[in-house]
Length: 493
Ligand SMILES: Cc1cc2nc3c(=O)[nH]c(=O)nc-3n(C[C@H](O)[C@H](O)[C@H](O)COP(=O)(O)OP(=O)(O)OC[C@H]3O[C@@H](n4cnc5c(N)ncnc54)[C@H](O)[C@@H]3O)c2cc1C
Ligand code: FES
Ligand code: FES
Image 1 (cartoon, helix red, strand yellow):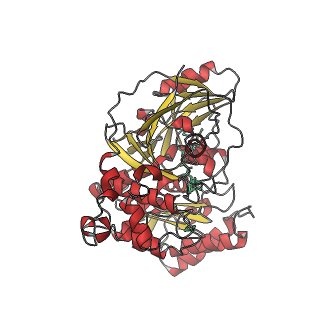
Image 2 (cartoon, rainbow, N blue to C red):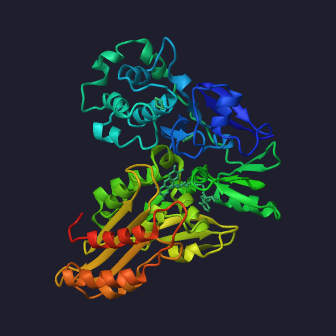
Image 3 (spheres, protein in one colour):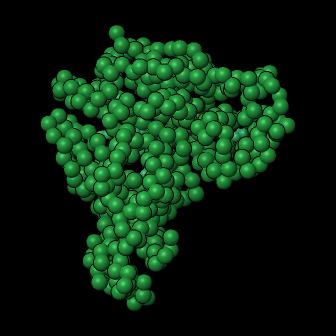
Protein backbone atom coordinates (compact mmCIF):
# COMPACT_ATOMS: atom_id res chain seq x y z
CA UNK A 1 0.00 0.00 0.00
CA UNK A 2 1.42 3.43 -0.97
CA UNK A 3 2.36 5.85 1.77
CA UNK A 4 3.49 9.48 1.89
CA UNK A 5 6.95 9.79 3.39
CA UNK A 6 8.50 12.84 4.97
CA UNK A 7 10.67 13.81 7.90
CA UNK A 8 10.13 16.11 10.85
CA UNK A 9 13.16 17.48 12.68
CA UNK A 10 15.31 14.77 11.13
CA UNK A 11 13.05 11.81 11.96
CA UNK A 12 11.35 9.83 9.23
CA UNK A 13 7.51 9.43 9.24
CA UNK A 14 4.88 8.22 6.82
CA UNK A 15 1.09 8.43 6.50
CA UNK A 16 -1.43 6.41 4.54
CA UNK A 17 -4.80 4.90 5.41
CA UNK A 18 -4.35 6.14 8.99
CA UNK A 19 -5.28 9.78 8.16
CA UNK A 20 -8.38 11.59 6.91
CA UNK A 21 -8.26 13.96 3.95
CA UNK A 22 -8.67 17.02 6.17
CA UNK A 23 -5.66 16.34 8.42
CA UNK A 24 -3.28 19.25 8.01
CA UNK A 25 0.44 19.29 8.68
CA UNK A 26 -0.41 21.40 11.73
CA UNK A 27 -2.84 18.76 13.06
CA UNK A 28 -0.25 16.06 12.53
CA UNK A 29 2.59 17.95 14.23
CA UNK A 30 0.52 18.89 17.24
CA UNK A 31 -1.79 15.92 17.70
CA UNK A 32 0.20 12.97 16.41
CA UNK A 33 3.82 13.98 17.02
CA UNK A 34 2.92 16.06 20.06
CA UNK A 35 5.09 18.94 18.82
CA UNK A 36 3.01 21.72 20.37
CA UNK A 37 5.57 24.45 19.75
CA UNK A 38 3.88 25.03 16.41
CA UNK A 39 0.70 26.94 17.23
CA UNK A 40 -2.48 27.68 15.34
CA UNK A 41 -5.18 30.30 15.44
CA UNK A 42 -6.96 31.35 12.24
CA UNK A 43 -6.45 28.12 10.24
CA UNK A 44 -6.63 30.14 7.04
CA UNK A 45 -3.11 31.37 6.40
CA UNK A 46 -3.73 34.73 8.05
CA UNK A 47 -1.95 34.81 11.42
CA UNK A 48 1.38 32.96 10.98
CA UNK A 49 1.21 31.11 14.33
CA UNK A 50 1.55 27.79 12.48
CA UNK A 51 4.60 28.54 10.31
CA UNK A 52 7.24 25.82 9.88
CA UNK A 53 10.25 25.50 7.59
CA UNK A 54 10.33 23.02 4.75
CA UNK A 55 13.32 21.81 2.74
CA UNK A 56 12.79 20.10 -0.59
CA UNK A 57 14.71 19.46 -3.76
CA UNK A 58 13.21 21.36 -6.71
CA UNK A 59 12.83 20.13 -10.28
CA UNK A 60 16.36 21.33 -11.10
CA UNK A 61 17.87 19.32 -8.24
CA UNK A 62 18.46 22.38 -6.05
CA UNK A 63 17.78 22.17 -2.36
CA UNK A 64 15.41 24.92 -1.18
CA UNK A 65 14.24 25.91 2.27
CA UNK A 66 11.08 27.97 2.62
CA UNK A 67 8.32 28.74 5.10
CA UNK A 68 4.79 27.36 4.87
CA UNK A 69 1.61 27.78 6.87
CA UNK A 70 1.20 24.29 8.31
CA UNK A 71 -2.54 24.92 8.75
CA UNK A 72 -3.01 25.06 4.96
CA UNK A 73 -0.91 22.05 3.99
CA UNK A 74 -2.53 18.60 3.94
CA UNK A 75 -0.28 16.04 5.57
CA UNK A 76 -0.65 13.95 2.42
CA UNK A 77 1.00 16.78 0.44
CA UNK A 78 4.27 16.43 2.34
CA UNK A 79 5.91 13.72 0.23
CA UNK A 80 9.70 14.06 0.39
CA UNK A 81 9.55 17.15 2.62
CA UNK A 82 12.01 17.81 5.42
CA UNK A 83 9.87 19.69 7.91
CA UNK A 84 11.53 21.67 10.67
CA UNK A 85 9.50 22.97 13.57
CA UNK A 86 10.56 25.38 16.27
CA UNK A 87 11.59 22.40 18.42
CA UNK A 88 13.93 21.33 15.61
CA UNK A 89 16.01 24.49 15.57
CA UNK A 90 16.55 24.91 19.30
CA UNK A 91 15.17 24.63 22.78
CA UNK A 92 16.12 25.00 26.41
CA UNK A 93 19.91 25.18 26.73
CA UNK A 94 20.47 25.22 22.99
CA UNK A 95 18.41 28.09 21.64
CA UNK A 96 18.90 29.05 18.02
CA UNK A 97 20.23 32.53 17.45
CA UNK A 98 16.91 33.68 15.99
CA UNK A 99 15.15 32.58 19.21
CA UNK A 100 17.82 34.18 21.40
CA UNK A 101 17.78 37.43 19.52
CA UNK A 102 13.99 37.69 19.68
CA UNK A 103 14.11 37.21 23.46
CA UNK A 104 17.01 39.63 23.96
CA UNK A 105 15.14 42.35 22.12
CA UNK A 106 11.94 41.72 24.16
CA UNK A 107 10.19 40.55 21.00
CA UNK A 108 8.19 37.96 22.88
CA UNK A 109 5.62 38.64 25.61
CA UNK A 110 2.84 36.06 25.93
CA UNK A 111 4.89 34.04 23.44
CA UNK A 112 2.00 32.50 21.51
CA UNK A 113 3.02 34.04 18.21
CA UNK A 114 6.78 33.66 18.75
CA UNK A 115 7.36 30.20 17.20
CA UNK A 116 5.70 31.45 14.00
CA UNK A 117 7.89 34.55 13.87
CA UNK A 118 11.00 32.51 14.63
CA UNK A 119 10.27 29.97 11.89
CA UNK A 120 9.44 32.73 9.39
CA UNK A 121 12.75 34.43 10.10
CA UNK A 122 14.67 31.19 10.17
CA UNK A 123 13.25 30.13 6.77
CA UNK A 124 13.93 33.54 5.31
CA UNK A 125 17.57 33.43 6.40
CA UNK A 126 17.99 29.90 5.10
CA UNK A 127 16.32 30.75 1.78
CA UNK A 128 18.58 33.75 1.27
CA UNK A 129 21.87 32.35 2.52
CA UNK A 130 21.73 34.68 5.50
CA UNK A 131 22.15 37.65 3.14
CA UNK A 132 19.28 40.04 3.66
CA UNK A 133 18.96 43.78 3.90
CA UNK A 134 16.96 45.61 6.55
CA UNK A 135 14.48 46.62 3.89
CA UNK A 136 14.01 43.02 2.71
CA UNK A 137 13.47 41.91 6.30
CA UNK A 138 10.96 44.67 6.95
CA UNK A 139 8.91 43.61 3.92
CA UNK A 140 8.88 39.91 4.75
CA UNK A 141 6.58 39.53 7.72
CA UNK A 142 3.13 40.23 6.36
CA UNK A 143 2.48 36.60 7.32
CA UNK A 144 2.74 37.09 11.08
CA UNK A 145 0.48 38.66 13.67
CA UNK A 146 1.34 39.60 17.25
CA UNK A 147 -1.22 40.96 19.72
CA UNK A 148 1.22 41.89 22.51
CA UNK A 149 4.44 43.50 21.42
CA UNK A 150 3.34 46.18 19.02
CA UNK A 151 5.81 44.67 16.51
CA UNK A 152 8.64 47.17 17.03
CA UNK A 153 10.85 44.91 19.23
CA UNK A 154 10.30 41.97 16.85
CA UNK A 155 11.33 44.06 13.89
CA UNK A 156 14.35 45.44 15.74
CA UNK A 157 15.41 41.90 16.65
CA UNK A 158 15.08 40.62 13.12
CA UNK A 159 16.68 43.65 11.51
CA UNK A 160 19.80 42.83 13.50
CA UNK A 161 20.22 39.92 11.07
CA UNK A 162 20.49 42.25 8.09
CA UNK A 163 23.70 42.27 6.13
CA UNK A 164 23.66 46.07 6.23
CA UNK A 165 24.39 45.89 10.01
CA UNK A 166 27.63 44.39 11.39
CA UNK A 167 28.37 40.80 10.39
CA UNK A 168 25.98 38.38 12.02
CA UNK A 169 28.83 36.33 13.43
CA UNK A 170 30.11 39.45 15.21
CA UNK A 171 26.87 40.05 17.06
CA UNK A 172 27.41 39.34 20.74
CA UNK A 173 24.16 37.41 20.88
CA UNK A 174 25.56 34.82 18.51
CA UNK A 175 28.76 33.99 20.27
CA UNK A 176 27.14 31.20 22.24
CA UNK A 177 28.23 27.99 20.58
CA UNK A 178 25.15 26.11 21.63
CA UNK A 179 22.84 28.42 19.80
CA UNK A 180 24.16 27.59 16.39
CA UNK A 181 25.05 23.95 16.73
CA UNK A 182 21.70 22.64 15.61
CA UNK A 183 21.50 24.97 12.67
CA UNK A 184 24.81 23.85 11.26
CA UNK A 185 23.87 20.29 10.54
CA UNK A 186 20.15 19.75 10.48
CA UNK A 187 18.95 20.35 7.01
CA UNK A 188 20.86 18.12 4.69
CA UNK A 189 18.42 16.33 2.52
CA UNK A 190 19.45 13.27 0.67
CA UNK A 191 19.09 13.48 -3.09
CA UNK A 192 16.18 11.19 -3.80
CA UNK A 193 15.22 9.78 -7.11
CA UNK A 194 11.56 10.53 -7.19
CA UNK A 195 9.48 7.62 -8.34
CA UNK A 196 7.25 8.66 -11.17
CA UNK A 197 4.60 6.03 -10.55
CA UNK A 198 1.19 7.34 -9.47
CA UNK A 199 0.72 6.90 -5.73
CA UNK A 200 -2.73 5.96 -4.48
CA UNK A 201 -3.68 6.29 -0.84
CA UNK A 202 -7.05 5.14 0.39
CA UNK A 203 -7.62 7.51 3.27
CA UNK A 204 -9.35 6.70 6.55
CA UNK A 205 -12.43 8.78 5.66
CA UNK A 206 -13.01 6.86 2.42
CA UNK A 207 -11.54 9.53 0.13
CA UNK A 208 -8.69 8.61 -2.18
CA UNK A 209 -5.52 10.69 -2.49
CA UNK A 210 -3.51 10.35 -5.70
CA UNK A 211 -0.06 11.82 -6.12
CA UNK A 212 0.77 12.20 -9.79
CA UNK A 213 3.99 13.07 -11.59
CA UNK A 214 2.96 13.72 -15.20
CA UNK A 215 0.11 15.64 -16.79
CA UNK A 216 -1.19 12.44 -18.44
CA UNK A 217 -1.45 10.86 -14.97
CA UNK A 218 -4.18 13.38 -14.13
CA UNK A 219 -6.34 12.13 -16.99
CA UNK A 220 -5.59 8.52 -16.14
CA UNK A 221 -6.93 9.10 -12.62
CA UNK A 222 -9.92 11.09 -13.89
CA UNK A 223 -10.78 8.24 -16.30
CA UNK A 224 -10.96 5.70 -13.49
CA UNK A 225 -12.86 7.88 -11.03
CA UNK A 226 -16.30 7.14 -12.52
CA UNK A 227 -18.92 9.64 -11.42
CA UNK A 228 -17.09 10.53 -8.23
CA UNK A 229 -16.38 14.22 -7.74
CA UNK A 230 -12.68 15.09 -7.83
CA UNK A 231 -10.42 17.99 -7.06
CA UNK A 232 -6.92 18.95 -8.17
CA UNK A 233 -4.67 20.13 -5.36
CA UNK A 234 -1.46 22.06 -5.76
CA UNK A 235 -0.37 24.32 -2.88
CA UNK A 236 -3.81 23.90 -1.26
CA UNK A 237 -3.64 27.52 -0.07
CA UNK A 238 -6.93 28.32 -1.82
CA UNK A 239 -8.72 26.94 1.22
CA UNK A 240 -7.38 29.91 3.19
CA UNK A 241 -9.55 32.17 1.02
CA UNK A 242 -12.50 29.86 0.31
CA UNK A 243 -12.69 27.21 3.05
CA UNK A 244 -13.23 23.63 1.91
CA UNK A 245 -15.91 22.28 4.19
CA UNK A 246 -15.80 18.77 2.76
CA UNK A 247 -13.22 17.31 0.43
CA UNK A 248 -14.53 15.39 -2.59
CA UNK A 249 -13.97 11.65 -2.91
CA UNK A 250 -11.01 11.90 -5.31
CA UNK A 251 -8.08 14.20 -4.55
CA UNK A 252 -5.33 14.56 -7.13
CA UNK A 253 -2.11 16.13 -5.86
CA UNK A 254 -0.46 17.79 -8.88
CA UNK A 255 2.35 19.52 -6.97
CA UNK A 256 4.98 17.05 -8.24
CA UNK A 257 4.32 17.59 -11.94
CA UNK A 258 7.56 19.21 -13.08
CA UNK A 259 6.12 20.04 -16.53
CA UNK A 260 3.84 22.55 -14.79
CA UNK A 261 6.76 24.33 -13.15
CA UNK A 262 8.91 25.18 -16.13
CA UNK A 263 9.10 28.35 -18.23
CA UNK A 264 10.55 29.39 -21.56
CA UNK A 265 10.63 32.34 -23.90
CA UNK A 266 9.68 31.84 -27.51
CA UNK A 267 8.32 35.19 -28.44
CA UNK A 268 6.13 35.23 -25.35
CA UNK A 269 7.23 34.41 -21.85
CA UNK A 270 5.50 31.09 -21.17
CA UNK A 271 5.20 30.14 -17.51
CA UNK A 272 3.92 26.87 -16.08
CA UNK A 273 0.63 27.11 -14.20
CA UNK A 274 2.20 25.09 -11.38
CA UNK A 275 4.93 27.64 -10.68
CA UNK A 276 4.69 29.08 -7.21
CA UNK A 277 4.07 32.82 -6.97
CA UNK A 278 7.52 33.15 -5.33
CA UNK A 279 9.21 31.47 -8.31
CA UNK A 280 7.23 33.59 -10.75
CA UNK A 281 8.31 36.73 -8.89
CA UNK A 282 11.98 35.71 -9.06
CA UNK A 283 11.59 35.03 -12.75
CA UNK A 284 9.82 38.34 -13.43
CA UNK A 285 12.58 40.22 -11.62
CA UNK A 286 15.31 38.52 -13.58
CA UNK A 287 13.70 38.78 -17.01
CA UNK A 288 12.60 42.40 -16.56
CA UNK A 289 16.23 43.32 -15.89
CA UNK A 290 17.54 41.45 -18.92
CA UNK A 291 14.94 41.98 -21.63
CA UNK A 292 13.64 45.36 -22.66
CA UNK A 293 10.37 43.90 -24.04
CA UNK A 294 9.56 42.40 -20.64
CA UNK A 295 10.45 45.44 -18.59
CA UNK A 296 6.82 45.70 -17.52
CA UNK A 297 7.30 42.51 -15.44
CA UNK A 298 9.14 44.62 -12.85
CA UNK A 299 5.84 46.44 -12.21
CA UNK A 300 4.09 43.09 -11.94
CA UNK A 301 6.75 41.93 -9.49
CA UNK A 302 6.05 44.94 -7.30
CA UNK A 303 2.32 44.24 -7.40
CA UNK A 304 2.91 40.55 -6.56
CA UNK A 305 4.79 41.63 -3.43
CA UNK A 306 1.34 42.69 -2.23
CA UNK A 307 -0.24 39.30 -2.89
CA UNK A 308 -0.79 37.27 0.28
CA UNK A 309 2.55 36.86 2.09
CA UNK A 310 5.75 34.85 1.71
CA UNK A 311 4.63 31.45 3.13
CA UNK A 312 1.51 31.44 0.93
CA UNK A 313 3.45 32.61 -2.12
CA UNK A 314 6.03 29.87 -1.50
CA UNK A 315 3.56 27.09 -2.30
CA UNK A 316 0.54 28.88 -3.79
CA UNK A 317 0.66 28.70 -7.58
CA UNK A 318 -0.38 31.07 -10.34
CA UNK A 319 -2.63 28.39 -11.84
CA UNK A 320 -4.31 27.79 -8.48
CA UNK A 321 -4.94 31.52 -8.16
CA UNK A 322 -6.53 31.76 -11.61
CA UNK A 323 -8.69 28.73 -10.84
CA UNK A 324 -9.92 30.40 -7.65
CA UNK A 325 -11.03 33.32 -9.83
CA UNK A 326 -12.66 30.83 -12.21
CA UNK A 327 -14.59 29.15 -9.39
CA UNK A 328 -15.40 32.31 -7.44
CA UNK A 329 -15.75 35.26 -9.86
CA UNK A 330 -16.14 37.60 -6.86
CA UNK A 331 -12.49 36.94 -5.89
CA UNK A 332 -10.45 40.08 -6.73
CA UNK A 333 -7.47 38.04 -7.95
CA UNK A 334 -4.41 40.20 -8.42
CA UNK A 335 -2.91 37.64 -10.77
CA UNK A 336 -5.96 37.60 -13.02
CA UNK A 337 -5.92 41.41 -13.01
CA UNK A 338 -2.25 41.71 -14.03
CA UNK A 339 -2.36 39.00 -16.68
CA UNK A 340 -5.63 40.22 -18.18
CA UNK A 341 -4.28 43.76 -18.47
CA UNK A 342 -1.53 42.58 -20.85
CA UNK A 343 -3.89 40.19 -22.69
CA UNK A 344 -2.10 37.06 -21.51
CA UNK A 345 -3.44 33.79 -22.87
CA UNK A 346 -3.60 30.42 -21.20
CA UNK A 347 -3.29 26.81 -22.29
CA UNK A 348 -5.80 24.28 -21.02
CA UNK A 349 -5.38 20.58 -21.54
CA UNK A 350 -7.76 17.66 -21.51
CA UNK A 351 -6.99 14.04 -22.37
CA UNK A 352 -7.16 14.77 -26.11
CA UNK A 353 -6.02 18.29 -26.88
CA UNK A 354 -4.53 21.57 -25.75
CA UNK A 355 -6.69 24.65 -26.19
CA UNK A 356 -5.45 28.21 -25.94
CA UNK A 357 -7.71 31.05 -24.96
CA UNK A 358 -7.80 34.49 -23.38
CA UNK A 359 -8.57 34.90 -19.72
CA UNK A 360 -12.07 36.28 -20.17
CA UNK A 361 -13.08 33.22 -22.19
CA UNK A 362 -11.42 31.02 -19.55
CA UNK A 363 -13.75 32.43 -16.89
CA UNK A 364 -16.77 30.94 -18.68
CA UNK A 365 -15.10 27.69 -19.80
CA UNK A 366 -16.12 24.42 -18.16
CA UNK A 367 -12.92 23.15 -16.52
CA UNK A 368 -14.09 19.68 -15.56
CA UNK A 369 -11.71 17.01 -16.83
CA UNK A 370 -9.16 19.72 -17.67
CA UNK A 371 -5.97 21.16 -16.31
CA UNK A 372 -4.55 24.63 -16.69
CA UNK A 373 -0.99 24.15 -17.93
CA UNK A 374 0.57 27.42 -19.15
CA UNK A 375 0.21 31.17 -19.17
CA UNK A 376 1.67 33.19 -22.03
CA UNK A 377 2.76 36.75 -21.39
CA UNK A 378 3.46 38.88 -24.48
CA UNK A 379 6.50 41.07 -25.10
CA UNK A 380 5.64 44.78 -25.13
CA UNK A 381 7.51 47.53 -26.94
CA UNK A 382 8.52 50.74 -25.20
CA UNK A 383 5.35 52.33 -26.63
CA UNK A 384 3.39 50.54 -23.93
CA UNK A 385 2.86 52.03 -20.52
CA UNK A 386 1.80 49.58 -17.78
CA UNK A 387 0.66 50.60 -14.30
CA UNK A 388 -1.22 48.71 -11.59
CA UNK A 389 -2.63 49.50 -8.15
CA UNK A 390 -4.02 47.64 -5.18
CA UNK A 391 -6.14 49.30 -2.50
CA UNK A 392 -5.94 47.26 0.70
CA UNK A 393 -7.26 47.76 4.23
CA UNK A 394 -3.66 47.39 5.50
CA UNK A 395 -0.28 47.52 3.84
CA UNK A 396 0.50 43.79 3.81
CA UNK A 397 -1.37 40.50 3.57
CA UNK A 398 -4.83 41.78 2.72
CA UNK A 399 -7.14 41.12 -0.19
CA UNK A 400 -7.80 44.00 -2.56
CA UNK A 401 -10.81 46.17 -1.94
CA UNK A 402 -10.14 47.51 -5.40
CA UNK A 403 -7.32 46.62 -7.75
CA UNK A 404 -6.73 48.09 -11.17
CA UNK A 405 -4.27 47.64 -14.02
CA UNK A 406 -3.86 49.92 -17.02
CA UNK A 407 -1.98 49.30 -20.24
CA UNK A 408 -1.74 52.17 -22.70
CA UNK A 409 -0.19 51.87 -26.15
CA UNK A 410 0.93 55.36 -27.05
CA UNK A 411 1.91 57.09 -30.23
CA UNK A 412 5.00 58.72 -28.76
CA UNK A 413 5.15 61.36 -31.47
CA UNK A 414 1.56 62.52 -31.47
CA UNK A 415 1.16 61.61 -27.79
CA UNK A 416 -2.13 59.94 -28.52
CA UNK A 417 -3.54 56.63 -27.37
CA UNK A 418 -3.37 53.84 -29.95
CA UNK A 419 -5.03 51.30 -27.68
CA UNK A 420 -5.73 50.82 -24.01
CA UNK A 421 -6.69 48.11 -21.58
CA UNK A 422 -8.32 49.03 -18.29
CA UNK A 423 -9.05 46.19 -15.88
CA UNK A 424 -10.62 46.87 -12.51
CA UNK A 425 -11.26 44.23 -9.83
CA UNK A 426 -13.35 44.34 -6.67
CA UNK A 427 -16.31 46.25 -8.14
CA UNK A 428 -18.74 43.42 -8.89
CA UNK A 429 -18.78 39.92 -10.31
CA UNK A 430 -19.69 41.28 -13.75
CA UNK A 431 -17.23 44.11 -14.19
CA UNK A 432 -13.80 43.28 -15.62
CA UNK A 433 -12.91 45.74 -18.39
CA UNK A 434 -13.81 49.40 -18.75
CA UNK A 435 -14.49 48.76 -22.40
CA UNK A 436 -16.30 51.99 -23.22
CA UNK A 437 -13.53 54.03 -21.67
CA UNK A 438 -10.94 52.00 -23.59
CA UNK A 439 -12.84 52.80 -26.82
CA UNK A 440 -13.25 56.45 -25.91
CA UNK A 441 -9.53 56.94 -25.33
CA UNK A 442 -8.46 55.67 -28.77
CA UNK A 443 -6.83 58.54 -30.71
CA UNK A 444 -7.06 60.99 -27.79
CA UNK A 445 -4.21 62.81 -26.09
CA UNK A 446 -4.29 60.85 -22.85
CA UNK A 447 -2.72 63.18 -20.38
CA UNK A 448 -4.60 66.37 -21.05
CA UNK A 449 -7.07 67.54 -18.49
CA UNK A 450 -9.82 67.60 -21.12
CA UNK A 451 -9.33 63.92 -22.07
CA UNK A 452 -9.09 62.78 -18.48
CA UNK A 453 -12.23 64.63 -17.42
CA UNK A 454 -14.24 63.31 -20.37
CA UNK A 455 -12.90 59.75 -19.91
CA UNK A 456 -13.78 59.89 -16.21
CA UNK A 457 -17.38 60.65 -17.13
CA UNK A 458 -17.46 57.64 -19.48
CA UNK A 459 -15.89 55.44 -16.82
CA UNK A 460 -18.27 56.61 -14.12
CA UNK A 461 -21.24 55.67 -16.29
CA UNK A 462 -20.00 52.23 -17.29
CA UNK A 463 -18.78 51.01 -13.88
CA UNK A 464 -21.04 48.32 -12.45
CA UNK A 465 -20.51 48.25 -8.71
CA UNK A 466 -22.41 46.12 -6.19
CA UNK A 467 -22.54 45.92 -2.43
CA UNK A 468 -20.58 42.76 -1.55
CA UNK A 469 -20.16 40.97 1.77
CA UNK A 470 -16.71 41.57 3.25
CA UNK A 471 -16.03 44.61 1.06
CA UNK A 472 -16.29 48.30 1.80
CA UNK A 473 -19.27 50.33 0.58
CA UNK A 474 -19.96 50.23 -3.14
CA UNK A 475 -19.79 54.01 -3.40
CA UNK A 476 -16.33 54.04 -1.82
CA UNK A 477 -15.04 51.35 -4.18
CA UNK A 478 -16.42 53.22 -7.17
CA UNK A 479 -14.66 56.42 -6.08
CA UNK A 480 -11.43 54.48 -5.60
CA UNK A 481 -11.66 53.06 -9.11
CA UNK A 482 -12.19 56.53 -10.58
CA UNK A 483 -9.32 57.88 -8.49
CA UNK A 484 -6.97 55.16 -9.74
CA UNK A 485 -7.81 55.93 -13.34
CA UNK A 486 -6.94 59.56 -12.66
CA UNK A 487 -3.74 58.57 -10.86
CA UNK A 488 -2.16 57.12 -13.99
CA UNK A 489 0.16 59.76 -15.33
CA UNK A 490 2.62 59.67 -18.13
CA UNK A 491 5.94 58.62 -16.63
CA UNK A 492 4.30 57.91 -13.28
CA UNK A 493 6.39 54.78 -12.95
C1 LIG B 1 -3.74 34.28 3.49
C2 LIG B 1 -3.93 34.39 2.01
C3 LIG B 1 -3.87 35.62 1.40
C4 LIG B 1 -4.05 35.72 0.01
N1 LIG B 1 -3.96 36.96 -0.57
C5 LIG B 1 -4.14 37.06 -1.92
C6 LIG B 1 -4.07 38.34 -2.54
O1 LIG B 1 -3.79 39.35 -1.90
N2 LIG B 1 -4.27 38.41 -3.89
C7 LIG B 1 -4.55 37.29 -4.64
O2 LIG B 1 -4.72 37.41 -5.85
N3 LIG B 1 -4.61 36.07 -4.06
C8 LIG B 1 -4.42 35.94 -2.74
N4 LIG B 1 -4.49 34.71 -2.15
C9 LIG B 1 -4.80 33.55 -2.97
C10 LIG B 1 -3.55 32.75 -3.34
O3 LIG B 1 -2.83 33.42 -4.34
C11 LIG B 1 -4.04 31.40 -3.80
O4 LIG B 1 -4.52 30.73 -2.65
C12 LIG B 1 -2.99 30.53 -4.45
O5 LIG B 1 -2.39 31.16 -5.55
C13 LIG B 1 -3.66 29.24 -4.92
O6 LIG B 1 -2.67 28.36 -5.45
P1 LIG B 1 -2.58 26.87 -4.91
O7 LIG B 1 -1.54 26.20 -5.70
O8 LIG B 1 -2.44 26.84 -3.44
O9 LIG B 1 -4.02 26.34 -5.33
P2 LIG B 1 -4.88 25.21 -4.64
O10 LIG B 1 -5.43 25.71 -3.35
O11 LIG B 1 -4.14 23.94 -4.62
O12 LIG B 1 -6.05 25.10 -5.71
C14 LIG B 1 -7.02 26.12 -5.85
C15 LIG B 1 -8.04 25.66 -6.89
O13 LIG B 1 -7.43 25.59 -8.16
C16 LIG B 1 -7.52 24.29 -8.72
N5 LIG B 1 -6.25 24.09 -9.43
C17 LIG B 1 -5.00 24.30 -8.93
N6 LIG B 1 -4.10 24.17 -9.92
C18 LIG B 1 -4.78 23.87 -11.05
C19 LIG B 1 -4.40 23.63 -12.41
N7 LIG B 1 -3.12 23.70 -12.82
N8 LIG B 1 -5.38 23.36 -13.31
C20 LIG B 1 -6.67 23.30 -12.94
N9 LIG B 1 -7.09 23.51 -11.67
C21 LIG B 1 -6.15 23.80 -10.73
C22 LIG B 1 -7.77 23.37 -7.55
O14 LIG B 1 -8.50 22.24 -7.94
C23 LIG B 1 -8.58 24.27 -6.62
O15 LIG B 1 -9.92 24.27 -6.99
C24 LIG B 1 -4.30 34.56 -0.77
C25 LIG B 1 -4.36 33.31 -0.15
C26 LIG B 1 -4.19 33.21 1.22
C27 LIG B 1 -4.27 31.87 1.88
S1 FES C 1 -3.20 29.10 11.98
FE1 FES C 1 -3.16 31.17 11.29
S2 FES C 1 -1.88 31.05 9.55
FE2 FES C 1 -2.07 29.00 10.14
S1 FES D 1 3.85 37.91 22.09
FE1 FES D 1 1.76 37.62 22.54
S2 FES D 1 0.83 37.48 20.60
FE2 FES D 1 2.87 38.00 20.17
